[in-house]
Image 1: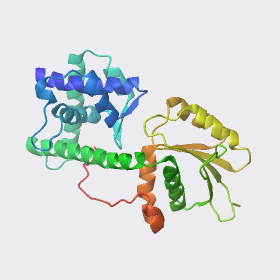
Image 2: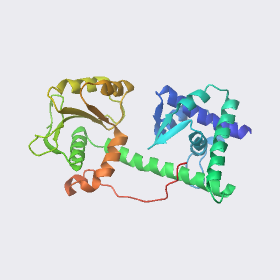
Image 3: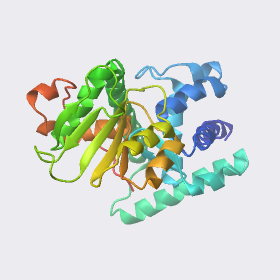
Length: 295
């Protein structure tokens, strides 16, 4: 019981960090924060013989599945989101939190078994959980590969990468800012070769892999959208502050924010439509493995 309580404490710590971060947080950042803020004994700081991963981190991933199945958190491409139910359960004591975690998971498990014609054995259930962990770790590893590659680019290389993505999405990019002052616009994209069709898109590119883009950048872009039919896009190799997201939502001109995760998703989605030259800017290859079912 004490061991389970300890592991559930790690999940609670992760959820508290997510809450402090505005309700969402990448697992990479959760891990980095917990490296320092969550006390660990020698055993927990050790590594697994099977794959060399940190024992405490592996346990966090394993037990976070209970929080996910209970509806306390959501996971999307490495980003963990705190749900309203999760915010409520965090108000409980650690013992009550642990009980709610196990009760929620068992409720999901009972519902799942009821829907199955042949219920899974305990060993099969454990195998499913292990598959989910493997899938999450593989997804995170793939994302880190993208992150390292893109972070190593200089600002103009990243700008060219963004322009390539727009071309892959079917846009023409008659203007990509040369080195020097760009007047706040890095890329102009049209749907047709002459720029007669709407929308005409003005793109601001920020190569900030380690710092979130502020609301000021969104306001500056909005100030350049002076004609009807113009839309704005801010693309970053990192993330956006909550104020920046709010500023984009409330803008009277359409402004879309593309953070690192969305950029990677769009690159993968449109990769087959890129020219051979543009593919060389960020070459990728698909690797297929079994994805756990959600339910």
